[in-house]
Amino acid sequence: MLRVSLDFTTAPAGDSIRTAGRFVVCGFSVVMLATTGCRTEAFSCQTDDGCRLETLQGFCEPSGYCSFPDEDCDSGWRYGENGPSAIAGECVGGR
Image (cartoon, rainbow, N blue to C red; front, side, top):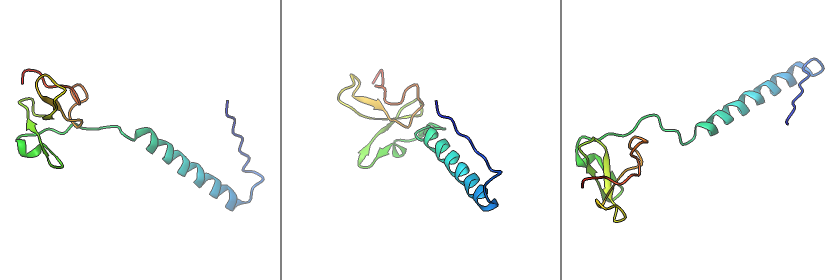
């Protein structure tokens, strides 16, 4: 268990402000690290032109999400990682 004890009563005013600033910076850093990799919205497409990964051309599925060629899938297509979490990275069925 980590215990932190702060006593601002004995520190000069400038020291307590610097210490408080460090807590703000540390708190902000923790929040940023905790939310790294969190997606807020899936990418949806309307045409195949919106489904491109560098030089790889994808397909805009009827669901409105991109799939890309993948020989490991029976259909030969896998949904992109930027789709909704329920299908992102999954093989496309029926194609």
